[in-house]
Length: 176
Ligand SMILES: [Zn+2]
Image (cartoon, rainbow, N blue to C red; front, side, top):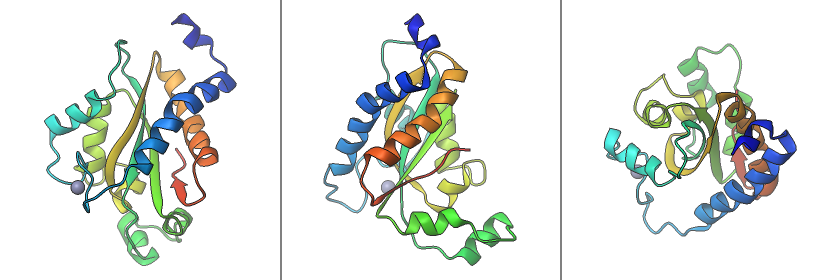
């Protein structure tokens, strides 16, 4: 797989279009018959549970650099609450943008995806601002990369592919 190292952004984008995008579309079109999806990230979450969820996406590589996609809960929250939570002087525009959509996706990158997942769902403050406001409910995808630099390049491209490829009613959080 040495070719991975020399992949251009446009090759990466093609790969992601053919792997991640259909996986996300399938997951989002799955009817969820209970209030909470099976194997959710919002109830009874511990290390073992997260490791099992991550393992569903393991492949025959031993690569640890991951780009992951979470579905997040589109809860209603005011700008005042957000400003107080993060001690902001101004409104956070992404809160309103996210709340104007039905479904929310968060794209992240990590070299230890199990720990990162636990930070998102358990450790208040250690996760991302986005998942503190809109809690992660499902792990929808993990793609593994052979280097940190490639994973960091793949993260914004994944967000871009999802934004372009999914319906207008889906909000994709912007990395960084
Ligand atoms: Zn749940």
